[in-house]
Amino acid sequence: MTIVRRTHERCRKVQKMLQTHMVRYEEKDLFMSKENQKELMERLNTNKIVLPQVFADGASLGTLESLEHLNETGELRHILANFTKIDVKSSCEKCGGYRFIPCNFCHGSKKSLRRNHFTDEFCALRCMQCDENGLLRCDLCLDQQE
Image (tube, rainbow, N blue to C red; front, side, top):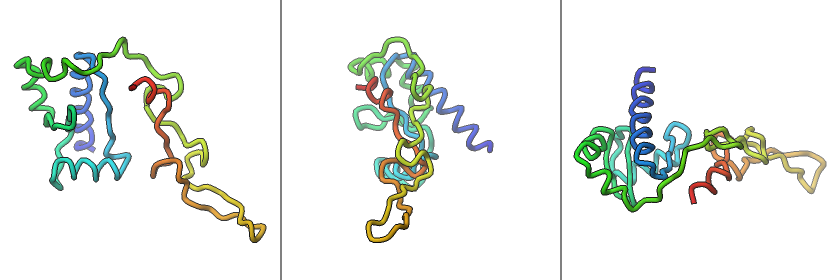
């Protein structure tokens, strides 16, 4: 539990730093998605990951420590200068700021019931609309990012 708590605190510090610079950013939760874990390992070309990791225009800015150093020296302001600025951060009406909602098709069960046309039985298939947790990205939050 302390490892998760420590990681959470470090991620919150990075969030606050990016919010202070008022730049639009995307978070990817590694605990929620194996795809995100795989993507990060490939981008960093390592199996050992220290969180949080920050990327800007596909280039790694590093972990919390390197981001704090960039912020203290003023380099972070120059790196983030060309990024889209956001207005006041508000909570999403649809997801409450969590950025994910339960799947509309399977309602979070991860199973899609379809009738077999050859018999009267139903068969349960893996829902193709949602991720491995039965969640979809909030479409309102995605619209705000663009």
